[in-house]
Image 1 (cartoon, helix red, strand yellow):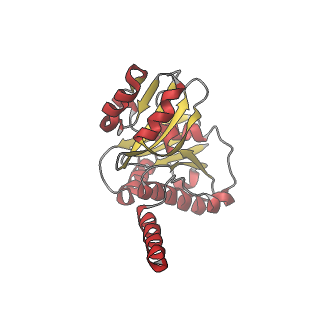
Image 2 (spheres, one colour):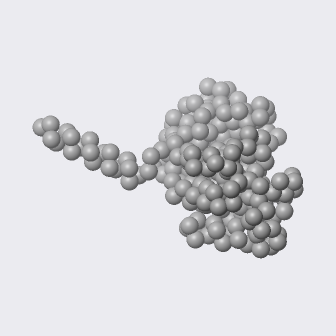
Image 3 (cartoon, one colour):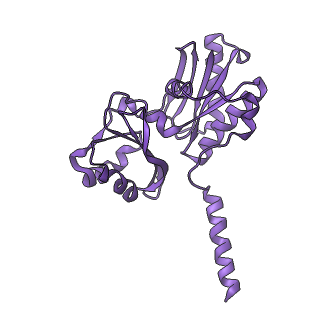
Amino acid sequence: MIWLGIDTSNTPLAVAIVKDGQIVAEEVSNIKLNHSGGAMPAIERLFSRTKIAPAELSAIAVSEGPGSYTGVRIGVTLAKTLAWTLKIPVVGVSSLKVLAANVPYFPEIICSLMDARRKNVYAGAFDGSNHLENVVEDGHYSMEDLLSRLKPLNKEVLFVGHDVEQFWETIQESLGEMAIRAPFTCDLPHASQLIALAQQLPLPSPEDVHQFVPTYKRIAEAEANWIKDQKAKKQNDSL
């Protein structure tokens, strides 16, 4: 089987082609460019360099979120469009689990996080000794809330993700020596890891592509503002 992997869930861009369990080509970058203009050219470069035609793909793996609303939407839209055109299945994987898979030999808790602004994060925690089973569900958390969920686990927690650095002081203040920082080499998502995780899941029917939706874990800011405005309007109308 030939897989294409796409991760645009945050600032980093990761794409890869894996054939019969071997990485054929992979590209990872952490440049603040709009994925709407960068993701498809990166995929086209993989096809060009590997001499693999899109029609040869067997399946597509995509990071389904959580993460940047726009980033997640771009990756999922690309995956669905390609899959529908080629009549192949799409398999979605948690973008946080993809990061956690970068440190497969840590036996305690692995916490992946991404900055969600205003001292909030998209985060999830996984049991490194049990096939990355969720011990803190993927979600949108304040740092205080996330740390309050991790502390009672009373285990070492390894934090991974390129946004960890900006929260590291707060993390250490809360968890002390129980907090461990992953090497910087593990902080970016790898689409080959995404594909490896997708291969562990049941392969859906190509017709299921229409039902595939991203996992945002938080409504878009524009929608949140609209809801806030509607509530304010109702309150004013009731006065």
